[in-house]
Amino acid sequence: MKTLSLILCAAFSLGVAAEVNYQVVPLPQQIDIDASGKYAVLAEGMTVSYPADNAQMKRNAEFAAEYFGLSAKPADKKKPAEVSLTLGLKNDNPDAYCISVTGKGINIQGASESGVFYGIQTLRKSVMNEQGEVHLPYATVSGAPRFGYRGTELDCARHFFPVSFVKKFIDILALHGINRFHWHLTDDQGWRFEVKALPQLAEKASVRPHTIIGKNIGLRDPANAIYDDTPETGYYTQEEMREVVRYAAERYITIVPEIDLPGHMIAALSVFPHLGCTGGPYEVWGVWGIADDVLCAGNPGTLEFLKTVYGELCDVFPGKLIHIGGDESPRVRWKTCPKCQAKMKELGLKEEAQLQTYINKEMEAFLSKRGRQIIGWDETLEGGLSDKAAVMSWRGYEGGKAAAKLHHQVVMTPTSHCYIDYYQLKNHDAQPLAIGGYLPLSKVYSMEPVPDGLTEEEAKYIMGVQCNLWTEYVLSPDHAEYMLLPRLAAMSEVQWLQPEAKNYEQFLGRLESLRQNYRKLGYKYCSTNE
Image (tube, rainbow, N blue to C red; front, side, top):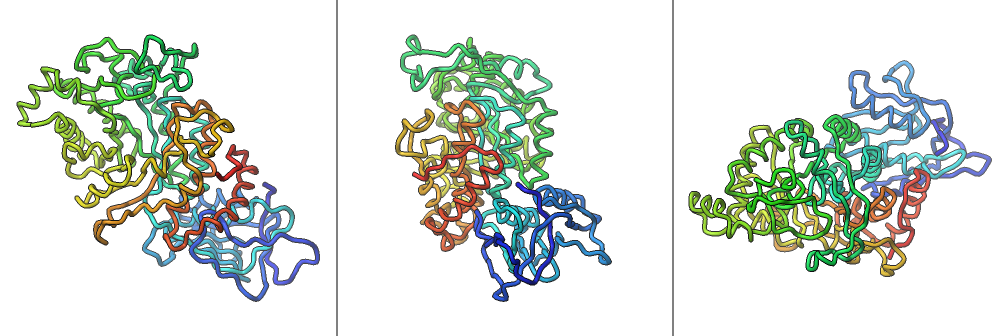
């Protein structure tokens, strides 16, 4: 993007100039353009100011300076800047912002530092595509998101993505007003989280010798499965993850790390086979699907292992929510395992699903002492939800509705609207291989996160909505970006706008400008809508 800064003008330019309309994605709640025809002009050499005693606002100013070609400086009443960043917006929503373009300059005010950041992003998207002199009509532009939790998930267990791409992914989220990065770190096919007390876990369980080719998943007929000959390796050191945490926090994004329990643990069992019901041997899975082998619920070493792992997870990730997975965990091994059956008898449990709740409650108590709250997939409801657990509803809306009725916090992420590992075009042959399904842009945009059947009080427990990018068939950063964009744009409007403010046809018009933003930034994206 051509570097720009600010000159204030109250007259029309004699030459051709681009005039912005502030119609970006996600759409601001209010765009009131002054009828006077007056405008500010962005040009080189001006400044952006911030409160001198606020480090977050200084970082915001540095972002604005980078985006617009300005220089950042502390606020000075004697020498006011052309662009000023301020706090004090009266709005109960901490992410609310208001951009005022007047004869006194441009002011971006927020209800908090995050609100200022989102105002900067709105202005950035408004001017990014323009060349030469850019007119900013005198206006008031304001916005505030509908949901406090606005998430996107990236699965780095099935295929490993380098730290450089994880940071780029976070930049993409920031552009769209997303504030939660759900980082899926472990699964049957790979363990990507370094545990310093158990170094062999990452060193060995991160290595998958080969991967099933295409749609031949190999579960029903493993003897005839066809594999590639390319090992999949890689894990994140704790130092690298702390750097990602810092990078995300500067962009007002909190990381929600996920380490699955008690299922999706084949990679860990390959290193610690005694923690499985059969004792193994196990090897890191090279196929996709659901494994019968899970952590042994009756082995006291299981909880010791989990507390070691999650204790270090808390040391790295300071966010309140810790994702424990809990999905796709068969209980067939528990039914025949003497240790598991003995534990059921000891606890007076009637069904194996309650063993999972037992583990969840133990981990909830452990994490609560560290000031954390567990969140899990909707299968965690099946044996009885632990006391303060939040639920991520992926198998449709019903799990989320049930949790909300029980007054548990809910993030809606049903496959029908939120699984962006699905094909986004009807013509599958025109796209890279995907896991299946069909989720076009319009279907994402049509999502209503608060389902019918909830009272007004129960609806308050729907704290947010999230889209998920699983990577069984996503092998590269370019492919991940293609699957993400522009469906993330549709999701951002679901997260930010009230239902009555959504209009798909109008969104498509604004999306074309956003696609130009993508090109400016070098992002890969799908150029077709259906």
